Length: 456
Ligand code: 5AD
Ligand code: SF4
Image (cartoon, rainbow, N blue to C red; front, side, top):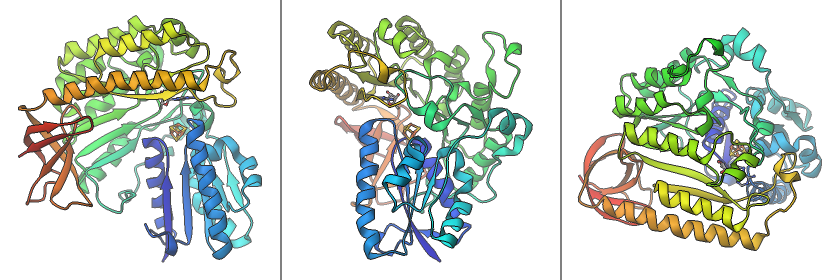
């Protein structure tokens, strides 16, 4: 048995990819270890979404270079979006890397690793499958795995990720993802359902369907001309089918693009309580000119309409969003529009980022990049506004009874369990009986910015 230390940065898609790579490594007799000193292989699954994410990888590679001087037999594999974006350049700059593979080449990890083990030379694979060949002509391109994919903690976790669509066709002008993850390719519904069934049979209670743009799931599998406005479409059909699987307690999905978000999706929340009462719908900015230059393909008013659909379907729907401050050319007045939208929508949570130019994207070539100090100040104002809203909403939960799906027991304090309410609020409960995996009624007794506290 050899041992692999897996390090994952970035989005949930990367976590799902790391699990898949771990599964492939199991087939090569590697087991997961948390102890770096006994690892034969370091697998770094990297993120390129902002410069800061990339820096973390570069500095980690520096540490591993020093380690490899003491332990020359150790192998280093770099996967993920930095591997795809930097490719051969990264191999030249970091000769300590033995295997480099992009997100489109995950299946090739065993052969790349074997090649490097045999020859001692680095091996690499980047690039993408062709949507036409792989999704339509060979429907079994990404079948449900024979065995339940392992988790990165080595435990049978309550909440599991299932990838439904690769890549993104949207080309928002700030975003590197279409370059690092290629064009959209949907998995076949029966493969997805098969994987979900296996996970539920192994103890999962919540499933999170993943894609960079889940709302366009399946549009590459059907004849789009046959879809009428108002039809449920392949994504909503898939959600409805997964929601019906026995053993499932909660169904979530991420990430949704408002452009492809439809009213039937909002209505499914009302029809199916397993969908919970929470959804993440990234808007990025509250100003029409900025949305246009970002190429988001919706106006602020169209975004508001989608929020209305959701809140008509489920009046107490909790909604979170992503926002970028300091997009090239963003004026003070345009930023104020974002603050106004945040005040108006009353999000349960906001993920706010300073704009980070990504080489090769359209926005990186735009003039008038906003100074760092201005971005800092805008980010601080935005976070302060949202923090107050989040705290107010969390405190309003005190005295209410909520259904909490318990996800894990605290490692530091045994007997303390964490779960999420139907509105996705993190909730802490003490119990002498094990709670993990159960969905139970909890009286909320306390709240702060990050979590609720409750009693069974
Ligand atoms: N700079 C800052 N934030 C970005 N995001 C994507 N690209 C960039 C960028 N270049 C943010 C968006 C997206 C989230 C995943 O990351 O808000 O929704
Ligand atoms: Fe990061 Fe985007 Fe790649 Fe996910 S898809 S790892 S967020 S760059």
